[in-house]
Length: 224
Image (cartoon, rainbow, N blue to C red; front, top):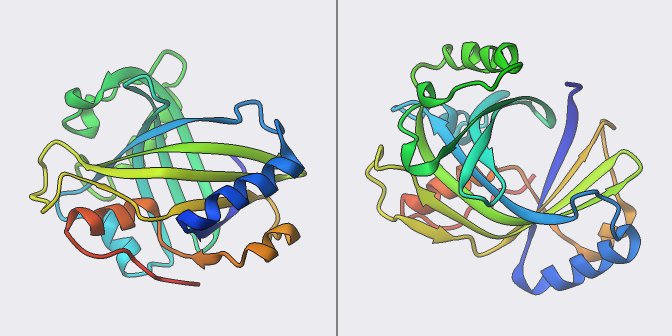
């Protein structure tokens, strides 16, 4: 899959309705799947190597997750590599599995015809070590498209501790903000109409923020 650029912006609760209105006015029904639920379980090593890459601001990051879309099962395995703002994703379909049945990455089984893609993801995971479910992040998503841009508004975001692998202080936390993501094959994507919103650009992921919340810490305010 071709790499792309990704920018993220924090959307405060009092900004959400205005942002949805602006994007809906310009890009209504521009995506074949305009809205839905996104449900992801992130995997990490016992010593949290993937999280530490985020925390340390590593030049290159890798995240491993399974994803579902609101039916209670997870049917895709993802490897997301990030080099600064440039992102490359590898996806493979897996046999549907429920949250309570996830104990380690080895529980996943590739669907027929997806073995090579799944093997690529699993081989990459071996560079870190055995992976275990760490945090589940669920949110509602609105999707818009324009030219080669893809805009998504992720709202009502919550993080849930995954299967007791780590002794988090909290089991479930709702984010106090929402997230706008802009994806494009352009190196420096820009949407002029967003300028009036004065949204804060951020550099941290939902996974990183979610772990902070489970640890009982405050919301991150890291800006670019």
